Length: 454
Image (cartoon, rainbow, N blue to C red; front, side, top):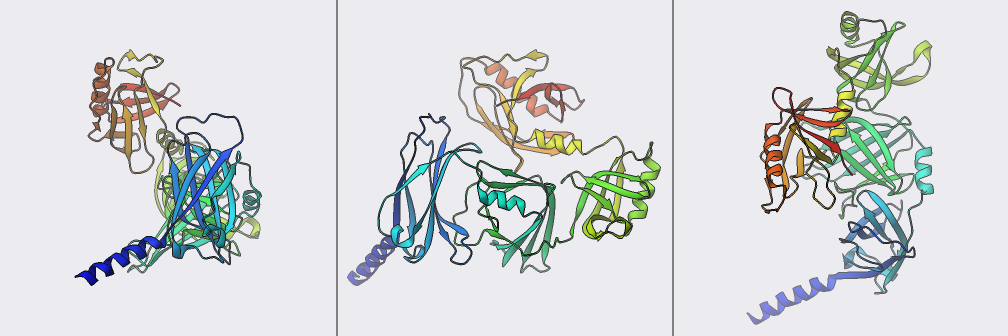
């Protein structure tokens, strides 16, 4: 028994000896007071010996950031840092999605293991040469094998186009049969953070940190680097060779001068329509529905985006191959999708409940509603209590699930809060007007009006 206890104690001591800590501090020289919601973050990243691509091995946060200097500790396993390796210590101060200050410094593994304290000087973010080079090299293809919970790996293939559109294919390897999913959408760059953001057809956002012209590092849902021993990097391929994205899509189609053209709702791409597959049905349905020659109409179809010869035999260009035509929708447009995007992730402040206007009063909490773009979850306040729940959005139909919330008793506004909650329970639809967001009942009558807040 004694020897067993000694053996177990030796294991504990050995395990604790493997855990190491890098201590550091960061400060900025500007005489600026940080907002109360500012967050400080630091990370330790190992750089690949061949590609110089970073992988996060430790991360810590100060929430709220407080006052400089910001002191941090980054814990890592002894085996994760070799004396001959190269490492990056990165830090930032952010408010929401806005980066206020940032700093990064390279160190050798020998220094990291020495126990010396790291000191960083934070500076306002500047557009980097890496990001400028990244944009100059488009169009481009990026690819990588990322981890999978129930398969061998997920192959990501990302095509970034010069016009701000992207195509993404995810293939789950090792599944029988092999599964793949394609997306279209728009990309944009957050210059402050050096982050590439994708908004795709599934209406969820993906984010990647631009490491350099050659590589993108996938971030988690909160926009932070993923701490893992697995690969989360997409590498630029030598040649731009776009895959043929295949999915259900909608767009504004018109037929003019003996050729069809479509502007896709998801990506904004304007593409010629190939005269093959189900194109004859598409042209016939458009001819039957159109009132004025060349008028754009919303169509739905299953199609492929593929390289086809351009007009007059010119070189290949991306075109839409309509594999299965579904419908022409008169008096509809891509604006409906854009309205749904505006509806989500906006803080809507209550300004009218029924026929009663709600004045904004300084130093009083506002009643508001916010629908998350991911997960169909909502957060809200009745002016006193915080509310949480779910929602279902389909076209102009909107319903809220059962709400849960805190149970505080406030001296003012409780009647208004109860009326707001009851109104949310009756919501069956919505519309955006020049006066804001209107929540509608089953008869399409306004229950409440809200305006976009800060």
